[in-house]
Length: 210
Image (cartoon, rainbow, N blue to C red; front, side, top):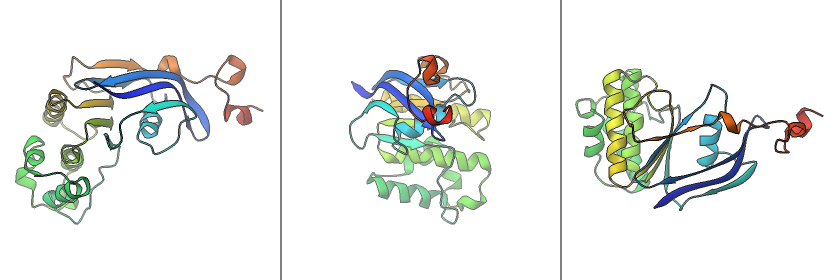
């Protein structure tokens, strides 16, 4: 089952095209890992897919209320406890118990701790645990393992694999091996935008190089 389709997409950062001509699909039960050098446009692409900025060209096709997006920010309420943070997000998305998320991300012993008192790695685990209470089938993740130790990376990789096994899908920008050897890799380097005089897409490049 196809959960996300991208056709001939072009995206911009700071008014300038960074990627163009990008097409791919993501099916249920599958993971796709984005690769490419720093600055190639991985975060810009994910922000565009999440609806935080419009594409310059192309189309993004996805059923409504399908995506859960996890960016660099953990998205936590610092004065709320671990459990209260998860309960807040569960209420936003209208899902059920937070217990599976606490268990999966090894947060049960921290459930009564205020988010402000957590270490950077613990905050990251809590931020990622939000994905498990959204009920959304498509996870879009921007460097999800930042601040995680090796054990927590394994823990998160297992959470992603369980999500895929349950019919979900994941699109991730990461340089870390999550142990998902079945994941496809998409190298963004060939889709780097070119100036119009070199055959690239017309857009804000026109003004920048006028």
